[in-house]
Length: 557
Image 1: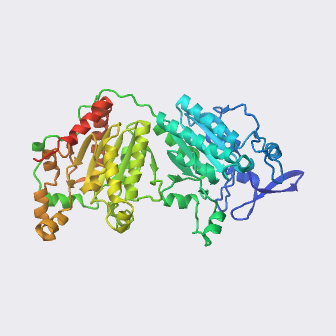
Image 2 (image 1 turned 60 degrees about the vertical axis):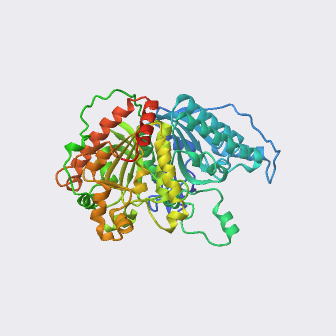
Image 3 (image 1 turned 180 degrees about the horizontal axis):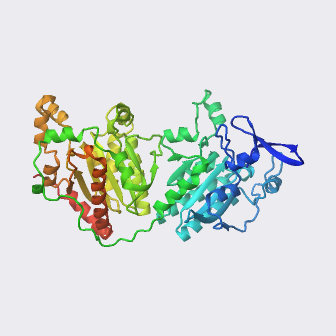
């Protein structure tokens, strides 16, 4: 553990003390060690040595070091106040390490993984030729074994003593991540403080999932450089993990004590092998004959679909998936609260779930913008779809939105582009896809998440090109004629099934899904389990062709 320490004699023994870098409190070192290097008073996460990190993440007895015979190099014959070889030798003597990264493979709660763990004590964790080579070899080991690659970062950036050759390590390691992507190998970054410069601008931020410790700083330029350049103070918490998550740049912030369990959950989901097999479930609870459904007033269906007591994505996820790992952000600077997505196990099989979050109270509805998805939300959904494609995991979408978010900001950030890209991406996925309209299916905002192999709808839900009020105002010149517009547009589940817009209707419990969330979730689970098992059993080319033909067939009725 790296920290300021003090010693004093106590009863013939040496008691070690340290001063917390966060709050300044003098603490008994063993107590902090028991807390994994976290201050018990203020929660500050002190830096850990690579060996401590590995012990904290990998199962005891499972650790197998990944070593390499590397030739010491001084390509530039570099000397500042001290010659580069002497600096390196001093770092080795102080840390006992060969270089600024330690690589190993092992298991995390029984799930295999390959780790590359950086150690800031060694020349500030700088990225030089040896570090780049070790990380690349560890990644190639993950590629060979088809095991997840986990990077724990701690670095000030590229190693200046190696000049432009250190820059080439950025390209080298980024190229490695590209190979892992092509092979469908999961890459996870655990960001610790600090992670800057060339390390941040290469393999660390290219990971599929990025998790950070509280307060960990991540960025390309350091805060002092930025302040000197722009000549004004930085926002509070700038470049910290919490700041980054709020801006959609990382997936989660977890205290050190939770990291191992969170990583284990992620590996449990993504490492679950699924062998497509013929469906053994004949009953899926889905009605596919319009004649078997009662006629309803479309306007009554609209009002029922909008009932804020109806369960939305957050309500269903807790009942559908085990080991759910939420992933956040579009990686471009935003995280849309209207989209809730991540990885989980549905009846023991992995799925990527992307749902619209609405809420039930005024505060929840406002926070989620009433389920109106922003461009960042569609880009987050697209990121999750690409992850599903990479890992070969089916996609389930749960849709309840009045439509995509309107407004100046949405247009400035390319709402139309984000929707069109989501439609194209989902239409072309090679993995099975199922979309379920659980409440409102509003316009292109809903279609962006509904270009699926199979589209289902709850019996009390609706799906339409525009809201009934909007249609009435435009075509009838009077928004009060919304009931007339709803009937004209045939928005209810029965008529949508008759038109072929949806493939099946999930019956609702008495009183609607709002009356019994648990029963609604059971019906949804039954339907999804059966449909996904059937879709998984299809040849991917057949599935892709059927999806294309499904939407290609729509014409004038």
